Length: 43
Image (cartoon, rainbow, N blue to C red):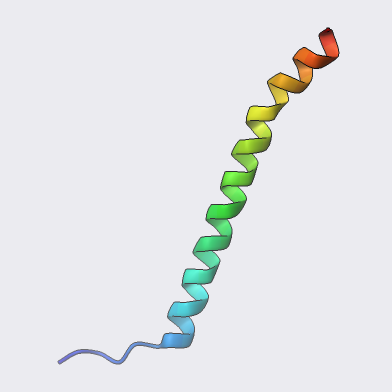
């Protein structure tokens, strides 16, 4: 038999995962920008 899904819990977990993913993407974008900033300072 299929167990009842706690939709509130599942939705909260999905939202949490999406926020973490977006934060990770933003961190990577900033990390990729650092060498460009250093190069522009050296010019």
